[in-house]
Length: 208
Image 1 (tube, rainbow, N blue to C red):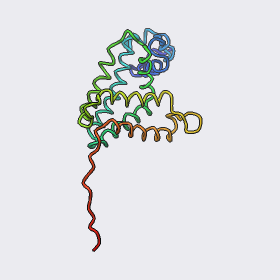
Image 2: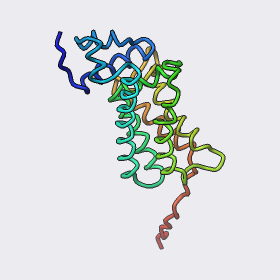
Image 3: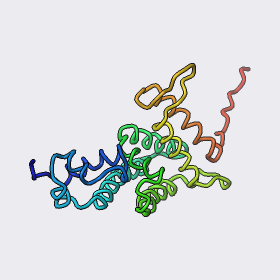
Image 4: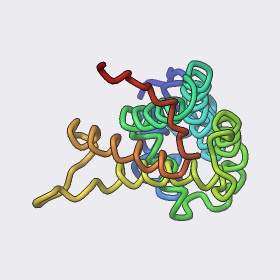
C-alpha cells in the first residue's frame, strides 16, 4: 500500500466517514482502509482519531464562518438583510451536505466526550449574525432563539424534507422544493421581526 498521502487527503477521507458514520462509528482503521494506507501512516500525517475529528470540525466551521462573514458584510438593510443571510445559510448547507451531517451526528450525542465544539464553533457564528440583525428583532423575541429557529428549520428540511401537497416528500435535491421552502423561511423570519413601518402614502390629486 502507498505510504505517501497528504494531510488534506486524510482530512477529506475522515470528513466523509465522520459525516456518514459519526465519530463513534468511525475507527482509525476504517479511515486508513478507506484511504488505502496503514493506521500508522494516518497518525504520522494527521494525528490520532481525536485530532482528526477536531480538524474536520474546524475546517467545517471555517467554511461556514467565511460564508457568513461575507454575507453579513454585504447584506443590505432591514428585512432584506435577514433574507440574504437566510438564503446564504440555506444555500451553503444545500451545497455542503457533509457539514450538516457532521453536526447532525452531534445532535444525537455522537462524540459526547468532546463537548466544547458548540461553544468554540457555533456560538461565534450566532454572535456574528445576532449583532447584524439585533435592531430588527422585537424586545419580546430572543435573537438567539430566532437564529435557532432558522437553523432548526433548515436542518430539519435538509434532513427529512417536506410533505408534498398531494403525496410523497419534497427533498432538498429538488430545486422546486428548495424554492418553496426558501419562500416559507422568508415569511417565517418576517413574522419574528419588528413590523415594517408603512411608508408615507402618495396623495394623487383628484381631477378637477
